[in-house]
Length: 113
Length: 116
Image (tube, rainbow over all chains, first blue to last red; front, side):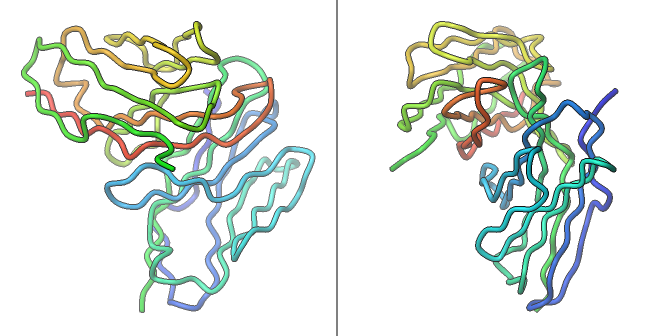
């Protein structure tokens, strides 16, 4: 079936390095994508979103890239800090069908001091 | 600003018992959602309410019922709890859901439910 998935379950980076978390999606009808951060014991926290008519969007220390040709989404975190350690989820909002987000299984980011 | 508030935070039930999970949002959002999260997995949609007075099934609705009490509140009920329903339950809200307009969903901190 169609789904949103992630390439790597765990990503370990050194403090100060840049992090890149990847996500593949298979539904070409999706028109909206979101990245969430989830810390232990808490709910998902919105980081950044992007619509399908865009290729790139920047926030504070984060950038989301969307490649519709290969159905790929990535989250880049600049100068990764220990507080960035969490599980990151991508989610898509499909243009047709159920009105809600479809989540990937998540990538755990571990920041080494 | 509390955002999305869920109660209780933790609950242990015996098989066959019933309970209602409560959710309230103070952002004046139209749409509300219930998800479950199992270990190592993403969130799966149980039910959602696109607007006050409407509810629809999500990906995994069996064993659950919902009530959109008013614009602020959206409750999830387990009529006869089963061990397979042990999970963390998250409520979320958004200004507008689905194809009507894409806005991010905002989540509560979850209810951790164990069924023995």
